[in-house]
Every structure is written in structure tokens, then in C-alpha cells.
Amino acid sequence: MKFLNCEDCKKLFKNEELFVFGAGVDGEKLYSKLADTVCIGAFIDNKRFGENNFLCGKEIISLEQFRQRRTHNQPIIVASYRFMADICNQLEEEGFQADQDFFIWDDMCIHHRDEATNKYITFMSNIWKDKKRPLSDRVILVPFDSRHDQNSVQYAYCSNYLAEKYDASIYGYCRYGASVKNASKVVFDIYKAFNVAGLVDSALNEVLQKESDAVFEKIWSGLYTWEDWKNITVYGICFGTTVIRDFFRQNVPNYDLRSRRMYVFIKQTIDTIVFWYHYINEHDVRTILLADAVCWEGYIRDIAITKGIPVYAAECTMQKAYLDFHGRSDAYLHYKDMWEQLSEKEQQFGLKWAKDHVEQHINGNLEEVDASGVKTFSFAEKSQGKRVLDNDDKIKILICPHIFEEDSYWCGEQIFDNSYMEWLYHLGELSEKTPNYHWYVKMHPCARRRDWMILENYVKRYPNIKMLPLHISPLQLKKEGAAYALTVCGTIGHEYPAIGIQVINAGINPHSAYDFTWNPKTKKEYDDLIMNLDKLIPKDNMEELYQFYSMHYLFYDHEYIPYRKLFFENQFLPMFKEELEVYGKELGTWKYEEYMKEWTTQKHEQLYGSMERLFQKMDDWKEHIFYKRQICIKN
Image (cartoon, rainbow, N blue to C red; front, side, top):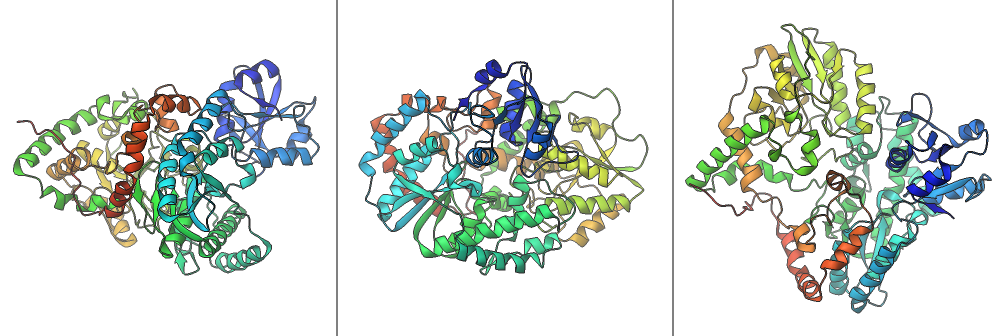
């Protein structure tokens, strides 16, 4: 099998037409690197193709459609790290020849080794060989994803500590339900180097498939609304919110909850639940490490917790998980109580600090956002130069959707059955009942391709709602008469009131403890607010807004366990893809080289020796306790 990087592709296929098998983020990335040199005919996808389905301006087609269009043996480039093996097997079964009809894009060295990976595997093996244990019936589970990142460091320390504690063996599970046969052998060699004994194959056997089919038929027969989805219960465990979160994280929702797309998704979901329910009940699982512990991983999380097995998030935060886990956001609800624990001097300093920083923020000071948000900071946007809102006296409402590729339940319960789409549908229906209002959608400044697809369909369905330009300043919108902004739980809740735009939330949010936004508790309360905006007395509680701002950004320590500094010295090593892009970097094996440079035996022994305290600290965290950041109070 021939693996190609971008330079290989440019040399081999310059001025030729080729087709990319993979219409996800990998295909999009390949297109961005080749489009100026190579002609991409279309993207091939097994599931997502048909009328009006495009990626990067190119049509998404089926393999059969590719056969019909192929005129002179144009090659296929497989660009899907997670499903590479399946795609290659499919192509070979249908008569395509490897290295002649199709090639594999592996710019990131996921499926073939480079020198840095070889060194890192040897390096990790030398570090962890003394912790290698005989195989045991007791199990520790760790996340496995076919990509090069530095999470292997956290997983290595945590899993080996737990394996030693429980005299257990370490096994990996493939995230998002990916098949073991698609797992990168290269990445798995890294896992084996820190004593992972194998990967759990989640394929259902014949008996479990029959059970899953029966469970599915019963569940599917009652799914007609998002409320029905929210109440999905299997084996006595309510998975509904997790199902909704998982769906929105990866899929483009449509308006028919009985569609084939929904059918297939729910079927796969029930397969996942059935497998992990039986696996966890039939194995002596002692502890489970998850990556972010939300969305798809929520199925494993809630089954394990129901059985009394401790579960921990160990990728972008280090925290003990709970049922319907949504991070440490419940602490927001206690900010007012925590405020009272500050001295008078601290409170005065906090209010002054917040006032200064809020003013800088709404005036577009780039120092008020982290590096990953500089390019999308809406308050730094210049005026469009032309009016974007209707020029009349009607009430003007901004709908401010969240990003669909992020977790859709990061603050907890929502009025509209924990479904962003039900919220949007409901607003669409309200727009048809309120001819005295102007309705607008303001796309999130960090919107991604899927957000555009969802919201472009949305405004077509509800033509009374107009789409605003992406790069638009909230200050311009306020100046043109925007009076209300609608969100589920977004940060606009403390940004927009600072410029005089009233915010109405649709669920628990970071500002729920305060009274500078509107927080209806039911759908009826929500509708009563929306339908009577002309009668609302605007909230003007800037002192509470400053109190929230100082608690959230100054006093409360969200890095309860500062895992980035705990495991790494180089700031780039724990960064995610989006963070690295700000600095012109990508995920890749270069991280291995940098980590090996900073590693020492002394640091290793200290870090491994701190694992017991680290897990105890995760066990001890409580939402109502004020974990206070150490700051210097200036006169």
C-alpha cells in the first residue's frame, strides 16, 4: 500500500484530475493543500452524497457515481484516517487496485512510521517497561484515537498508576465507535509501549446483535419528538441527553425525526449501548479513563457510573465524571455565594478590575481574548460601512446559535429538551407569529462548515429570519437598533448586556445566579417573554455583571488540576488542533521530539509519585467549594 504526503501528491498528480474518498475534515484539509496544484473532481462518500451536497465547492458523490464519471483512469486518494482500512478494503473488493487506482494520503504519518515515531516508541517502551504486568482479568480502559497527539503522556501515567493500584491490565477502546480494524497500527505501537495490552473490539456477535435489534425496534417505535429523544432509556439508564449530544457533535440535523438518517444513527447508537453494557457487566472493569467524557463517550460513562465504576476525563481536563457529565460548569450557580467569601478589599478590587476589562473587551482590545480567538473576536470587527438591520422602529431580535461541533450540553439542563435544534425550530415558529418583529441569525464567529450547512437550511425553512454577515460587530448591531439577543447558554450573556442588548437564555447558563439576563424556567415562560418584548422593562444591573465577570475571569480557579503544566513544559505540547493553527502549527510527530527533549528521570519519578494525590484531588472536587485563584490585590 502506497502512502503519500502532500508533496508526493503534487508531484504525481500535477495538472491531473483526482477524486478524494473522504468528505470529512481530512478530505477538506487535503483539498486546502492541493487545490492550487491538483484538480479535485469531487469527493466520494458512502453515506453523504446527493443533490446540493458539497464540500469546498465540489460535489460529494457515491462510489458508483465515480465509476460513471471516470473517463481516463483518474486516481482516488483515500483521505480518512479513521476509516482508512474500511475504505481500502471496499475499493479492493470492487476491483480497484492499490497503488494504481487508489493511494492513501498519510501526511500525518498515521499509518506508516517516520523517524520521530520510531524514536518515541522506543523512548516510551524504555520508560514504562518496569511497570509492565502479567495479564489480569481486571481491566483499566483508556481512550484510543488514530492520531498523533500528546494525550498518550497523560494516559500512560494515569493508566499505569491505576493498573499498579488494582493489579489490572490496560486496554484501549476506539473512540466514536470506530472499528478496531481501522485502528492505526502505528499509534497502537505507542500504546503498547506504555503497556496497553490490546484494543476492545466493539463489534456485536450474533446474540448481541439480535438483542440490539429488539431494543432498537422498541425504542424507534416511540421516537417522534426531541422530548422522546431526551427520554431514551435502555437497561434502566436514561441516555437521552447523551444521544442528543452525540448526534449534534457529528451530524447535520434535518427536520424529520423519522428520516432514514435518524433511523441509522439511533440504530448505531443502540448497538453501542448494548455492546458496552454487556462488556462492562461481564468484565472486571476497575476504572475508566475517557478523553472528554461527553457525547459518544457518555454511553460508556453512564453505564460504568451506574455500576459503581469510577470514571475520569483525562484529555482536555482532569476531572471525575458523573451522570450526564458537563464539566465544572455547576460551579457557576454558586458564584454569588463565593463572592461573599471575598474580603471587602477583594470585592472592591474585583469590581474595578471587571469594569476596566469589560470596557476593554467591548471596545475590541485583543488582549481580552486568548490567542485562539483573536481572528474571530467580534468586538474587534470594523463597521461594515453599510446598514445590515432593517431601518425602521420594529423590535429587532438576534438569534445567536452555538457551534454544533462543540458539546451542546456544557452548562446543563435546557428548556427545549436539551436540543439546540428544538430551540431553533421553536424560534422559527415564533418568527411566523410575530410580524411586528424583525428576526436575524447572527452566526457564531467561530462557525465551521457544518454550522453553515445547518443555518443556511434553517433560514430557507423560516424566511422571516434573515442571516447576518459573519464578520459583524455587536456594536454596529446595537447602533442599528438590535434590542434583544437569544442564546441557550452563550457568553453573549455577559457581553451583550454591557452594550445595552438584553439577553434571553434558554437553559442553565454561566449567568444563572445573577439578574442581568433573562432566565425563563419553562417553555411557557420563554414564550411569554418573547411575545411581550414591547412590555419588558430592560435589566440594567451592571454591578452584578461586574461581579460575575470578576468571579469568572479573575477569582475562580477553573484549572483545579493544571494538567498542561503538570505534564508538560513546552506550551505547544498539550495544545489542540485549533490552538496550534493560531501559531502556524499542526498536530504531528514533531511533538514527540519536543517531549523527549524535556523529559528527565527526576521529573518522571516526581510525576508518577503524584498520581495518588491527583486522583484523590479529582475525587474531592465539589461544585459549591470556592477554589480561589491566587492573585495580587493592588491598591
